[in-house]
Image (cartoon, rainbow, N blue to C red; front, side, top):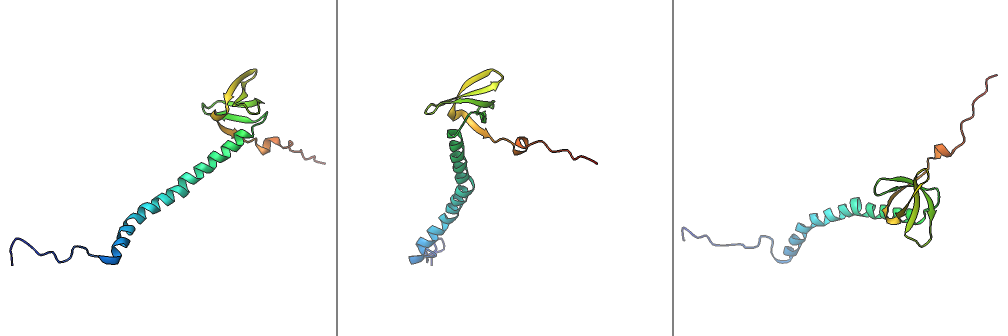
Amino acid sequence: MSLFSTPAYAQDAIGGMFGSLAGLSQFLPIVLIFVVFYFLLIRPQQQRQKQLKSMVSALKRGDRVVTAGGILGTVQKVRDGANEVEVEIAPNVRVQVVRDTISTVLQPNAANDAAPPVKAVKD
C-alpha cells in the first residue's frame, strides 16, 4: 500500500442510466427561471405592445395622445395609409407626428362626459 497515492474506487457517483437525469436536473432551475421571466415580463410586454399598436391604428379626430417626447395633444387629422398624424398641441398650433412616436392614447374620463349633477330642490 502506497503512502502518497489512493486508489480511485468510484469515478461516477450516480453512473449508468441515472447520469443523464443528473445533468437534466442541473438545468431545470435555469429553465424554470426562463419560464417565469416569460410569463411575468415578456408576455405582458408583448400584449401591451399589441394593444398600443391597435389603439394607434384606430386613432380618430379628437383623441388625446402623448408622444414619446412627452407632448400632449389632440388628434386633428388622420390620413388613412399615411404614417403621419396631425396633432394640435396648443390652440392653433398643429404639428405632424409620426404614428410610431405616439406612446399613449389617453382615454377620456367617464365622469367628465356625464351630465352635471342635478341639484335637489328643498320644499
